Image (cartoon, rainbow, N blue to C red; front, side, top):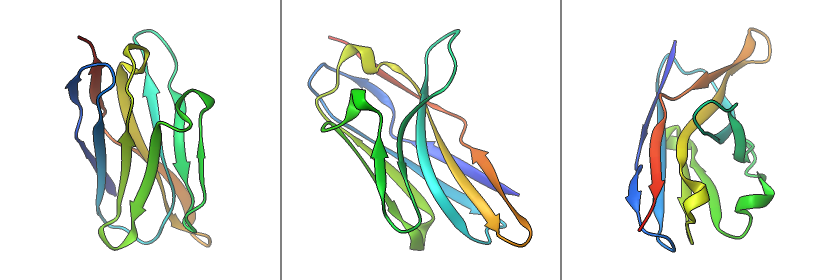
Length: 120
C-alpha cells in the first residue's frame, strides 16, 4: 500500500505564490507519472499538471506560465510551484501518483487534498 501526504496549502493574496508538496511512503516499487488535480465543491476533479517518470511535463491551459510541476525521485515527492495566483485558483488540490510494475500492474494513488485559498 502507498500513502501520499500533501502539504503547503493555505491562504494567499492574489498575485502571491504557494508551493505544494506531496510525498509518497509505504511499499513503493516504482513510481511512474505524478500529477496534480484540483476540485471545487460539487464539481469533478480536474487536471492541473502532470510529469512523467522521464520529466516531461504538461499543464492545463489555465495554469500555463504560472504553475510549475517538478519531482524528486529520490524522495518520491512531487511539487507544484504556484505563482501569480488568482482567486479562481481557489480549490482543494490533490496529488496523484501511478505506482507499481509493468508485470504486476500500475495503480493510481491519491493524496488527502490540501486547501488553497486565494483572497485579499
